[in-house]
Each structure stands twice: as structure tokens, then as C-alpha cells.
Length: 303
Image (cartoon, rainbow, N blue to C red):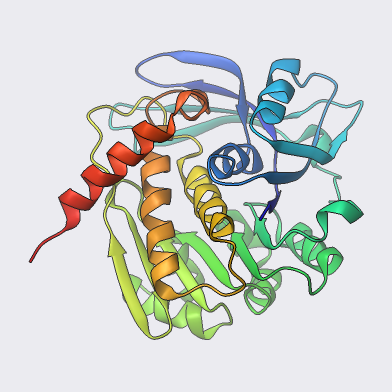
């Protein structure tokens, strides 16, 4: 079962206390697609410019990511530049150039519309609505990620989107902002009442919370000895979650399925932080992943 992923594809310039790199593969859809491809084939929808490197195109193809929904434009690719500081939790955006992304409207190829899992990676709610309008009733499970900017400038359209998706993924500060509460548990429960069957609240280095079916699951994060670049960790989390669900080949997913997906997303997000861009994910083997997953089970199990 394949995953359709729609969102931004970018070129990043990232500076951390460890190093600095330019022209890195970035964007919400890029991270999500590479992460999801560890579990299932991916149909990618996005836009890039004339300056998008061939090596990134080759990477997608090598990872069974179908680029049939990616528009290749004559303008410049969306670019983001940011710097992280000593604790790696503080980030400053230095520059944003939307370029071809600014006027982009997603167009879903006919061959992609049969995708059973839809991931609306972090993007303007109007674009997320557009994708759902085009795929119709085909998907068995739809997932949406969002951010504080859309809560501020497109709140009503975001709230309308909640009624159309099965799972909302949002970070802790954004959940509090959207539901106007300081309590994460209250925020998660209220979000479930807004439409989605499930809600996942990401807590960064502290893991994630899953709400749904009047149940609750708390998952910690895999403890890392060193964080080199946390860019895209949240996108990798939701991408791997979507890919894992697709790999199950089901028409319906249980709370346990979602819990297992959260655990795997946590592991993949941790790997993302161990290098710049998607470099660590590109080299990740199934044996490495299964070993870390087994370790993670040991860390979290108790009698």
C-alpha cells in the first residue's frame, strides 16, 4: 500500500554548533517521504525549481519515491536558512525564500488518487484542502500536520480541515495555542472533539502523546547521545508513521496500530537528528532500525 505525501520540498542552509551545510534537501514533504519510504512506496506531490540538484532527485528515485506529482518549474526552489544554538532546542530562522512555492497549487495525478494513505505534510491549510478535494473518497486514512503560522493566519480553514482528516499531528505549543489552553491533556481531548479520530501531540525530545477512542498513550523519545541537526525530525516522525500504517495493508486501524506507529516514528525521528538533512536516514539499515526498536521496548517496558 502506497502513501501520498503532499507538502514542501526545499533547499536548506543549516548552521549548528557542530557544523554548517548549504543546499541540503529539506522541506516537510521531503523528510516525510524519505522516512515513509523505509516502510512503503511513496507518491510525492510538490514543486521544485531549476536549481534543485540532480542528486536529490536521484535519492528520491532510489528510495521508491514516485515523483510523478512533483512539478519542475523554471523559478527557484523554496529555500530556508536557520541556525541552532548550544542546547539545540533554540532555533533562529535567518532567511526564507518561498520562490516557486509561493504560488504553487497542488495537482494530484490520476495515478496517485488511488493512494490509500494520504499525508498532508506541513503546508498552508488551503493546499491541504485542495489535495483532499482531488483525491475524493479513495483514501482509507488521512493525516494532517500543521504549525503555529497556520494557526495564526488561517485558523478557520485549519479548523475546517480537522473535520476532514482521521489523524492530526501537532506539536505541544501549537496544540495549546489552537485549543487555547495550557494543559496538553485537555488540548488533546478537545482536538479529538473537533473532528479527527486520533490526535498526536509531538513533544520533541520528550516523545509524543496519542489520543483517540477515549484512550491515551504516552511514548517517550529514544535517548540520543548527540544531536547534530533536529531539522525535519517532526516531519520524519509523521512520515514514518504514515509509511508504517501503509505497510500494514489494512482498511481500518486500531488504537494499537497507531501506538505502534508512534513508537516507530519516534525511532526514525531520532535517527534524523543524528546527521544533517536526511543523511542518516539514507544509510539506515533494517537491522539497525530493528535493534533500536528492541532497545526502545526494553527502555519503556515495566511490570
